[in-house]
Length: 462
Image (cartoon, rainbow, N blue to C red):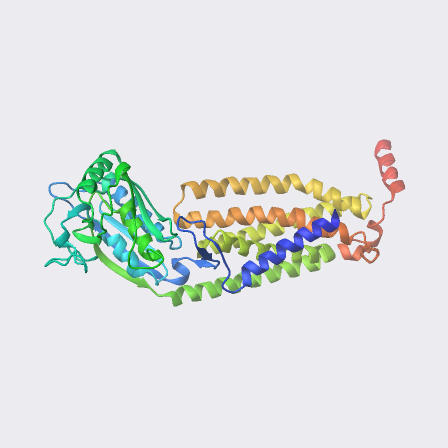
């Protein structure tokens, strides 16, 4: 059993090291379109920079947006930005008609601008054959993606008829865009496609063509699949995801306009990150030094467990993945303190048991048993608090809470499993039967039942 426990600890540690330091490691993404996800440490806006844009919700006709309307617009924009896969975007309302969008990273800033800026009405518009320029049906007007709609055709229906949309694949394994229409839209589309086979229809947002696929046959039931004839493998992934995002989050109750934008310099965040890591490294070294000086050999084992805890938590951050912000780093440092606190409770209880006359193995087992209730109570209290923060806090607070939850759960594992398992093995070795290794006097290491009885006899005589 002891060897099995050590083998489990070693295997978990090696896997954590691989996740932490193996370059270009990827795992299946389990997303709708499959593929692999690169395992990497994600940084928030305050650490890697990014884009900050402020929008105004614009009145339409005689309708002015209320605070409730702005909140609806904010939720739709937040879903759009989240659908891009960026790390912990922050979308906030300001006043009755302002929305602030903060997106970490600069690589997708143009894509975010385009997606958030597409805020008008999503429409499905019939296209006569001559309106779509191809080698088979040339015409004076062409429906070009990204360009204004070249016809004055009335929309067949709007984006409110879309029930769901996702990236899929056809029978040849090519990437497609699939969407399902509600009952009214399904009936309208079924009637139209049955009468207009080999013609085209346009998906239009803000009077600009997003896609203009051909109709290969009648489409009953409202289950629609769009394929791409421009790529051997079907839609490119980015193009497919963008079209799905438009279908799912295309319509807003009010249009928005961009008021201001600001690119946050990542060098400032890099400086903060370097200083935070430096401070955290010093703190961990001081903690290890204290544990070694005060608790000696158990402190050395606890220090190893602390380093083990660090690489394990970092691996979990990369696997989940967790977006690290300055608040998240604060949550991690706090969880380190809780991991050390658990070991201190265990070792102090062990010292008390040794002073009562128990043998070394008995004292260690009793120390773990007596400290467990205190460790469990404090960690459960922290988990309850962190869960409340995660459920009801803002995105920054949620990041702090998530890091704290992961850290607390991992610290319980390392304190109870790793430290305990290694201590059980070490105390059975002959070289470990020395009092100075545990920070106690030589006479306190060996059990002396007669002395304990004497003390009890004196108590009864008083």
